Image (cartoon, rainbow, N blue to C red; front, side, top):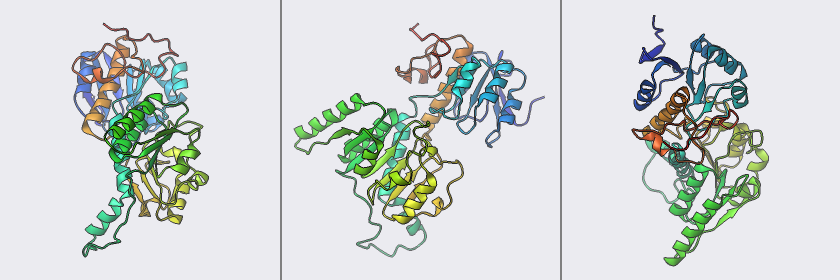
Length: 383
């Protein structure tokens, strides 16, 4: 008897794979069919608890795809091990919701979906930057409310970004693309902080600066900051792109907000816990020309009291990766992770481009196994 809360695909498949939420597209299901997998998809739109996940996994399961909204902890991975689960993949590039150490101790490879989110999420950060700086949401609400009575010289004065300074904290894939867009699009100087220098990014900005000079324009600069504080103090716009760990939890707190310019713009598309949300609400109230744009929240989906009522905050519901191409690509990568491990394929190196997995004939490898080294999973060397 089929559970009404599930959708079953390829019911005669040899390997049982559980997916905790419906995913977009069809290619990911074809990948599972080609790997001989029976796919059981939970249809509920509610976030699953640990007890619900264990119940859905049952006594036997071979692979699982879960969501970033679910807490995959030691207790769950122990249950997965007992059920015979051979691989888990997070439907996300981040995996701070996953206890990777616990999974590794249970011998379970953990997958993620790298690369495919980069440009899409960077574009969302740019969108939030422009919307916050130019007060787009306030003006939209004003106009829809029938308050517009004609052009006024001082109506909704915003912040000019051209030739100002953009700050990036966390200059990985997404942070680097965001920085490049802001530098190239608005001729902004870039200051960034990361645990290590991004020499590739610095060379790119240097080459672009030389291009500007050759065309008779003022050059741009790229500075590496030894601390996040320096970025916050100098930049007109700061976009947050760090990983979430013990060192970045509440990286942005009341003291650091006070370092920022009175009319600065703060953007967060990384993880909500990077920002002390209550402190941000208080700062926005006390500094009406300060603006923020958020795609993620500290206690998601809940928000800190007062945040929703701020005119100087642009808030969207975690849609940084929400383009059809990206979300379908994430499903493909998650499926490739699970199917590849079940077929005994090696892991794809983190430094390799994942684009080949998005075509019709993906490599015989798992594209995003984060604990491959710890589990001594060999790496792909080509056909």
